[in-house]
Length: 290
Image: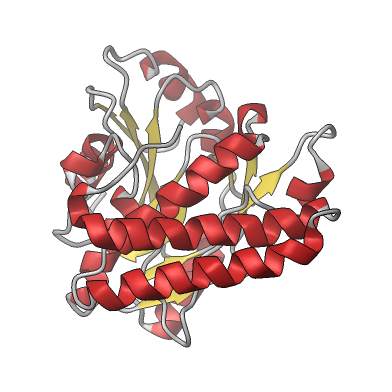
């Protein structure tokens, strides 16, 4: 399918059975009138291990299956973009599910705002034994952010965008931060972004991520990725990051006996320290997290 009324919905997968549920949620989509959906799945495993389960799950839905080996998420995402022929491209993670009106909400927001890309929230679904301090801070949800009135960058776990020639940096495909970098570059080139707050998707929280150590590593890496994407004013970004980290540590002190408050301010301090570190190191100063 080609043309402006086609949305290519892309999923990159690596050895996850949950891709079946993700595809089922896409088959249940109710697109806006005149809009057609096609599924593109890029298998990032060394061998095409997901082919059979993807083919079965897709059923009658139009599908392009691409084997994009090397365990590099940027290669998989670029393979999806290369296979796209419609006027619009959406991304959903292989461990997420979308309600039936997801694409319709994203589409309406994109057309209403005239944006080049629209981001929606990815809400975590926590298991019953999740620590209270994680749930109260909702640490595993991925929520698009505004800085002032501007959306600077975004994520690929819930996005609809106009198809373009932009591609993800392959050198960041193993370390992380490739989507932050991708949308930062688009924004600096003049692309406009918007947020659709009511176009949520859902992800079951991985129990391996329900640990303070993982969250600290993740927040620091996110800060590094953000700081490394800064082109101008790196010195100011370093100073601001260190100052904000110190401020957050001061705010954390009264919460030593209050785990949710301590975690909130402590992880904010970690993020801003990562921003300062990333701004110093530049694009080569990225750190992976699992």
